[in-house]
Length: 286
Ligand code: FAD
Image (tube, rainbow, N blue to C red):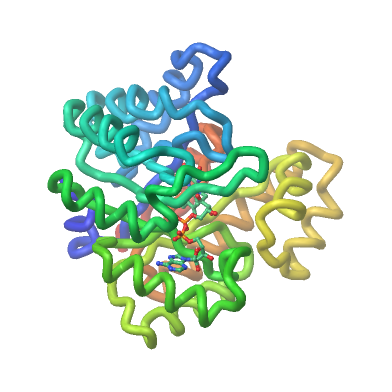
């Protein structure tokens, strides 16, 4: 089933998982996946070599497993480090497995790995995928601006190119301040971007995540968030509960504001995904 069809019917609620390190067996995520299936999200997306981890070979296998359990999978596909023929082979594999939904991405540029130059942007990949078959294609978007773009106006103009190239819907980078998402949404709609946009929510439930957030993702941290993190940062149970409550609050406000969907970065933590799903189940379905 094409994920784009879901947005016509409901507020979409999706999960994201990542494959294990390439040195670990793929089975290590299967227990988590089984628990996530029980929560009946609208779809589960699987990252592909995110952060240059090189664990892309597992992504197809995990997406197949998700499909075999009756949940729609979406496979992420970064292109900057792959040639057209490598992408073509991966698309053949995706098709063979009956996976119909792809999140088309450029991928992060690693200063130590010279990019293959067949695809410079996600928009190039989207055009290519469309020549290779009938897929539902999603793209990424950045409420607080992609770090390579000069400013948010330039980034939104580039996002429009991605949608014009054929992106059916978009998933946002994580953010902790809903007002930054609403501002971005306004700019995107004003630029003529009319496809559904899911809000990316990451529950921050441990200290390592906070440190990584601050150094890598560039999301602004509202005062309320900083206060919670500094008060509970050294108490793992309290931080986990506070992180879940913060994410639930964000979701309630987003759904009340009419968001197209919520994409939960589960970090492969089924306990946290369950707590959040239970807390918002009536709200998402309302
Ligand atoms: P692009 O859309 O190509 O944008 C990159 C930059 O180029 C932006 O600054 C943009 O403004 C500019 N730009 C875009 N199109 C054009 C154009 N046509 N002309 C000129 N400039 C343009 N990475 C992984 O490796 N694996 C994953 O599984 C993965 N999953 C992700 C999931 C989500 C929801 C998100 C938000 C990101 C994910 N990433 C993943 C990270 C992503 O690959 C990086 O953020 C990367 O730096 C940008 O990818 P993109 O597809 O947004 O790139």
